[in-house]
Amino acid sequence: MNEQLEARKAFIATGLQNSPERKAAIPKFVSDTYDWARRAQEELNKHLEPPRFLARNYQRFIDDALLYAEQLSPNRDASIYENQLYEFGTIDLAGLIGRCSEVDAKWWK
Image (cartoon, rainbow, N blue to C red):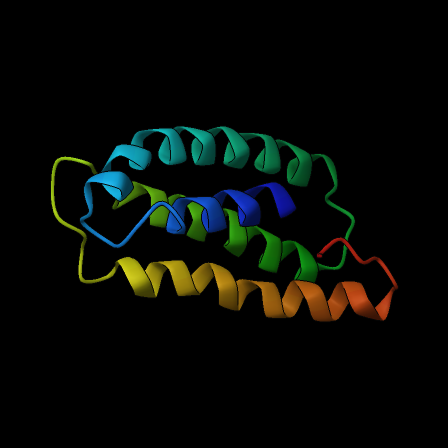
């Protein structure tokens, strides 16, 4: 998850929405997100025994990362939903951080 969080931060840091710098960063961010989501999904699928709440939250984080990447394109202006989709991934972290905290499994920075 830290890998995806760092990629999101780096992408946002490339510039404002619709700036040439941000648009130029979209293809790599989207490709990296698809790669991460594939690996994250494979790992989640290997571990069907975690508490369902944790598994569902992690699934939401993966899915929301893909939804965010899906709506990005260097060939069009930012969607009115871009910021909201980005925030969904941030909101997903609340359940994950809380549950992991309970079992002292800290993975976030």
